[in-house]
Amino acid sequence: MWSWVLHRITGVAIFFFLLVHILDTALVRVSPEAYNAVIGTYQTPIMGLGEVALVGAIVFHAFNGLRIILIDFWSKGTKYQKVMFYVVIALWVITMLGFTPRHLINVFSH
Amino acid sequence: MSTAVIDEAAPAPTPEVIESFTVTVIIRRFDPEVDEQPKWVDYDVEMFATDRILDALHKIKWEQDGSLTFRRSCAHGICGSDAMRINGRNRLACKTLIKDLDISKPIYVEAIKGLPLEKDLIVDMDPFFESFREVQPFLIPSSKPGAGKERIQSVADRARFDDTTKCILCAACTSSCPIFWTDGQYFGPAAIVNAHRFIFDSRDDAAKVRLDILNDQEGVWRCRTTFNCTDACPRGIQVTQAIAEVKQAIMRGKP
Image (cartoon, rainbow over all chains, first blue to last red; front, side):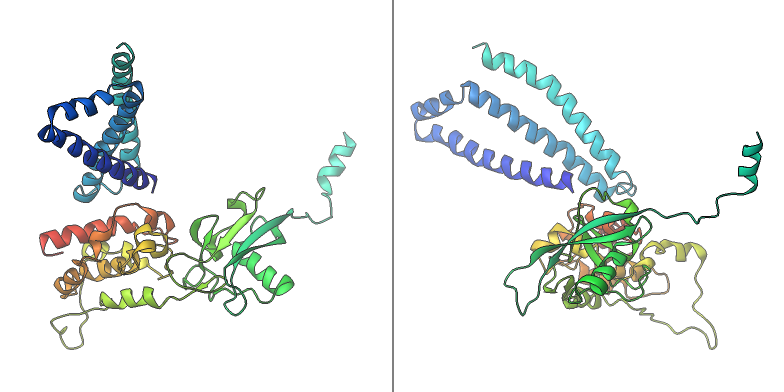
């Protein structure tokens, strides 16, 4: 249940990120100055923290997506779904432990 | 020394008093003739640890408020009449013991979700049984057995669908499914379980028909593997597993 709820929430969040991302990237066709101005606002600490949330959402969605594929296509997938959920959480924690400190040092050392 | 011997020889004649507890049960009541909205009403009942939620409902109905309405038939987990939401989980009231719940807090009891509420703990089960009928849950053989013979099946072939024969159609699974809550058109886990029971039966020859019915926008592909149905099933059926097997059978085109 909670894996599904998190999968939905992260999925919708990633969708809205992609929407904004396509719009801001498309700005380069409008004018390079406008593009630079918008991308410049992303270089703030608040956006840096937002990026941690974004990467967290994508990492969970990716690992849990693999878990769902295994549930659907591996004959023992439903039996080990709980174990696989804990593995997803563990992989998420490991990935975020690697990413977050390095990223935040970059964000706050500018 | 002597007292100890006497004590051992003559155990206390008074019968052991079984401990009872005052349990608060909060029931979501709804009388369509009076109420606009369902409301939570609490009742205090004296219960033993070995009593069931169904006993609490009986005590309330018989001793406190005769208007409390709920379904129950066999009261022993076979008929599937008394599925309800107990502390937020779908359970059979007749199989949920007081000792398995935390009675330091009140126990919340409400009707199962996703089906139209009729009164108190009773919902309209018609949409549920409609989906059940749609998957043709009966044996459809294409050949007749020899005169005076039975349809022979090996132990392994019987074991293939053993799990899904246990269904008692209580609707605990279907009404625990978040997809079913928002999309009443979805067949629901119970209908798929009962389709599975015949799709994988070696004596049955209409698997293609049933797979076709379930290969629908509102069929098995609505399942998002939340596993709520597996957790809710009072018979311990691996519901999500059965749905996954039907999905794979549709992709293969045969059971």
